[in-house]
Length: 115
Image (tube, rainbow, N blue to C red; front, side, top):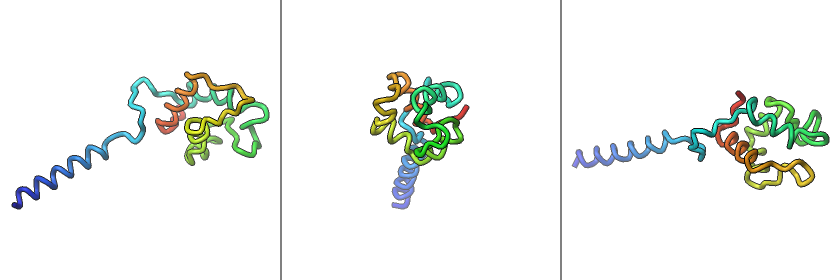
């Protein structure tokens, strides 16, 4: 009887550890490793931090540097508007290409590395 309890406990422990060790993001593509400095800054500069939008003193965030974007990244605002709702960039701005969208999503899923 005690042996059955120990085996059951061991089984639950193994299952729990298996799930705990999995990555938190859904992106398991090993080739997906963009960084802000290498790929993302150019996308942001072309589609977000443009004249009249996310530049210095813009009410909804200054995206001219990684440091300035960090608060919006950590709160999930960028993921929500760009990936989930797809309302950013707005219709009047340069649209994201499919490749840029995928890079941004990958970068966000991988916890937005700077370099």
